[in-house]
Image 1 (cartoon, each protein chain N blue to C red):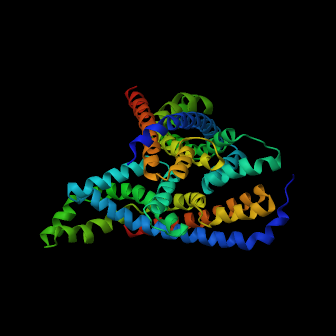
Image 2: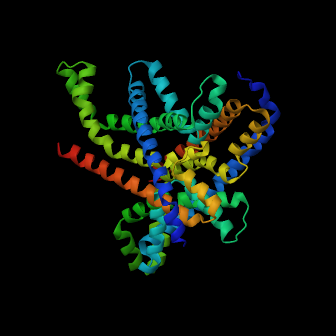
Image 3: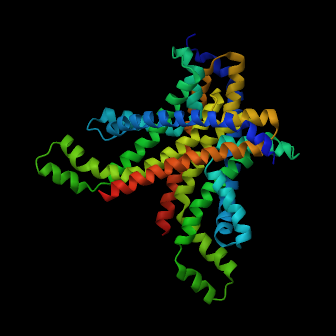
Length: 215
Length: 218
């Protein structure tokens, strides 16, 4: 184990970790936005929207995220979409993770007892009112933990953007492995930083979950 | 530069060959991760502490890090310790180990969920601890956990695209080769996505059938 080397390269990994964090936050935000749209579509009254929502989920969950990223980044210019690698990473991963989050959110909403919605409707609430005032507040509580699982997976999947040369943790590790031939040391540094990020986010989610359960 | 899908037929054989390799690597890694997962689960739960802890540390490291990073470790790590294996083997090992950890997590939960009375009954009938585990507990645990394991195998198919970065000539890398000579990334990546999607649909259909069987057998 070459500790001297590990110390020398550590600052570069820290910088890369910051990119991974930025990437994760932006991707999670876009993913949530896509998931809200996707869930609304999947639970819509209109068959067309339900079909579109289901197609979105099926296509993006049914193909590798790496290929989706490549279509966007390398294929995009052919259809007039020119993005830099970081933006392509955020959009590609965000839309991908949105499909997984859609299933999570839909699952949580469906898990709320049917009778709740029916009771609200009987009391004279509109469909929209019943959703906002009765079903969603309960579903929110159910979806925090599984969304946390999605976010945990998302943080690890940000490594994919290394394949389109975004200088984040995995790319940095790969570059130093190539130049120093110390794969284990570089793996340990990058792995440690990933685990710290995931741990902190995990704690945050547990906290939110506890808080939601208390209310 | 517009789209021109007419370049595809010329390279279709290369891409389809890549698809066969993708299926091969998925099947190999799935088998490794299934049996490896059972083994790791049993070790993590029942082995003496001295054996158990290194495996737990390994699980911890592999659960918390991206697959791509692990692939780099395994590929370059093997080269460094002087083991010269073909990229395909490195890919199977990398993908396999990654999913061993995920599967083992599932197996551990389901092994612990098997009724304690089952072990006691088996022991009373004269089976050794090991026999009780192997013949009574593990078979039931495995049956209960097939659906989530199946989902992991479907995830494995999609993650197999990553082994292209360590030079395994599977679907993704063959597309990249075709793109290298045609400069048509959009067309070939869409084609590749469609092929992954089809394999994915087939796997999902098989999994649903298996799930129904299990449900019926209970």
